[in-house]
Amino acid sequence: MDNIERLYKCYEVLSEAGDKISEHVEEYKEILKAVKGTSKEKRLASQFIGNFFKHFPELADTAIDAQFDLCEDDDTQIRRQAIKDLPKLCQGNAEATTRVGDTLAQLLVLDDPSELQQVNNSLLSIIKLDTKSSVTGLFQQITSGDEPTRERCFKFIATKLLTMGPNVITKEIEDYIVEEIKKALQDVTADEFHHCMTILGATKLGSTITGHAELVKLATEQAELNNTDTDIIAVDDEVVERFIQCATAAAPYFSKTIKSTAFVAHVCDKLLPIKTWNMIATAVSQDQIQLRLLKVFAEMVTYTDTLENASERINAVYNVLLEYMPLPKLNDEDLGDTPPSFQFSHAECLLYALHTLGKKHPNSLSFVEDSEKLKDFRARLQYLARGTQGVFSYIKKLEEALKGKSAEELKTEENQLKQTALKTTSNINVLIRDLFHSPPIFKHEIVLSWVVPKPNKLGKRHAPITFGDKAAANGKEKQEQEQEKKARPSNDQKFYSPPSGKYSNKVNQNFGNNNRARQRGGGGGGGGYKNRRFNKY
Image (cartoon, rainbow, N blue to C red; front, side, top):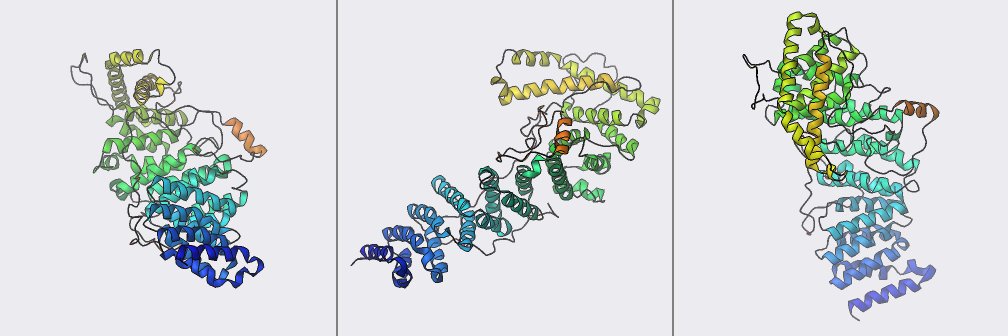
């Protein structure tokens, strides 16, 4: 009898054994040995191992390892078949489910689309069988896996797991996910921090005021706002980037109830002093890094509470603003066709911050009390206003270009940028009109040029993931929700000057040959990679 016939015979014996199946250990062992055979034997073994797995608990480890061997085979068809059959090992076996979940999590780095689709399908299958054990396997790789694997696990949780609805993502499972993501935040890269906050924003934390407060607290802890060494902050690009990322993650959750005061004070005290400001990101694209910082600062200023040392902190904003509002050139009466070069996006952020903080602290504008400073400030404002007028013909061309465009046409990147340019110069002119008064007034309100106004709906501001039905907020939270009607920043805002740097999409290119070292689910290392964290972030 050849090997194929023998495998079918073993299958027949086990299928017909009924209650006495456990007596046929040798037949099951023969099926397990077939994973070392020909391609056809391997495919049959893959199908047969799971069918009888639960009847031979003493061979469970051997059977799981045999199936995992097939998942690493050189033959793509065998790998796909083995991955497809993995869920058979999980029926009624929590330990096996965790091991399979761990292994499937590692396989998320596969590049072949058909194999990756099969990995996703198998993961979803075992999650439906035993959600807690499966998710435990995923988090084992988030804890101990290498960076590409961790990233794929975070993305799977965000885009697949959390969309499975309340029948799968029960309160218990959601609580477990939140707990594990919080643990992961203790040691994450910048990209991973972004993924973690996105996931948490899609859970119950994203749908209540108390949840928003907790998300802001997590971002605050990661930002390390209590660092007292100004020089380190100034010269360490990673620390500046960490603050920008943490502030950006927290910004959508600030409100009349949850204040941004600590973040705003940190920017004024640690980042805006001129010597510090000029040292930020000197080794990279300084203008873009500074602009990203100013944009998130401007967004946060709206929700700051009364500032201590308001005069000193507003003065820090004022001094940096002067850097972007040069004095008129001597005898420069006519700008003509050569208008001065202004960084309008930077100026918009700082003018808005000064205007907003001035409105909250009208008696803390120290430059207003100094006649020479006020004269200087008004001259700079006037020159900046002339600068916006100097590009009036360009603005008119933009307006003409946007007229008659359909809503769909206006969504193109080119037209979005044109609209942002119009909003930027328009906002600057509105703010200048208020600040040019002596003393300045704070009559007008603007929407920052890159912010897309949206109704403030709890749970939908910073959650690009659909997460089933959320329980209704309690009565107090509903009242607070009704009070929060102001426009909020959109998660997909368009920048006039796009920020530098993109999240890395690199993945492990070495999967698919038998020489790679892969963990066997349920245990082992893979952690210890370098540069995952700088301090907590």
